[in-house]
Amino acid sequence: MTAMLEVKDLEVSYGKIKAVKKISFSVDEGEVVTLIGTNGAGKTTTLRTISGLLKPSGGEITFQGKRIDAMPAHEIVMLGLAHSPEGRRIFPRLSVEENLLLGAFARKDRGIADDLKAAYELFPILGERSKQPAGTFSGGEQQMLAMGRAMMSRPKLLMLDEPSMGLSPLMMKKIMSTVRTLQSQGTTILLVEQNAQAALSLANHGYVLEVGKIVLKGTGKELLTSDEVRKAYLGED
Ligand code: ATP
Image 1 (cartoon, rainbow, N blue to C red):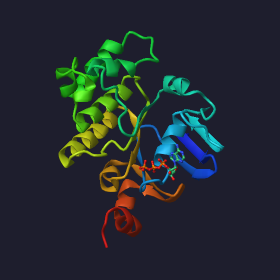
Image 2: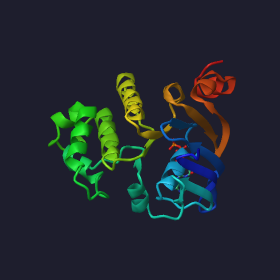
Image 3: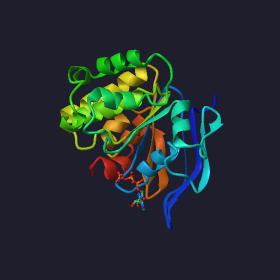
Image 4: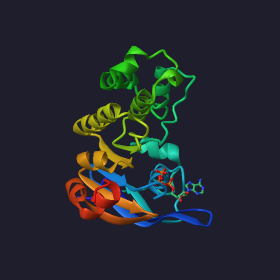
């Protein structure tokens, strides 16, 4: 079986700075795969490149057998790849519903109303406050909105950039359990996290990035119990 997403020898630079240095990884259909690593490891750069927001200086990205590394971002969304960015990037003056509808911009079908309903089922608070400006939401609620918006494009693969950032432990649990729910509903997920414990606990596979390189890979369980990960990322001796 070929992977749903295949990243091969990917290189990404900002001018002379090489942020991603020949990394390779893959995501199979139905999996949750996580990329973990500290600040500046290149996680966000990798997701932005897969989404088509940055162009690689080397390597290949293949999604469902199709090369996407030279494609514009809006075409990549239409293939079924959605991105919930770091820092949420919601539109604060627009209502919850308007923000959600922006996630469906690439679609012309008539299922959008059903998908709004599904987003409100996933996160009831979004439904209760659908007319409220999104800027009045808490960090956790904004994260729900960012995930709901990404789901509005009906993605086959959902990429989440640090969904737990700045959230209370309780809210983080809620977000992580939603990742599981989405997986059980058939969405494949690529999850970038600094919170290694949370991400590895639910991931089928994981990769550890350090200054632009993959230094470790394994199943979520293997990485959670590996000495290197425990020392470097879980704060254990
Ligand atoms: P974080 O969790 O802090 O976002 P990250 O693993 O996502 O970290 P990136 O944001 O991908 O890391 O950054 C990787 C490297 O690229 C860092 O050294 C960073 O300083 C650099 N970098 C990121 N964005 C830019 C930019 N727009 N211009 C120049 N360098 C950048």
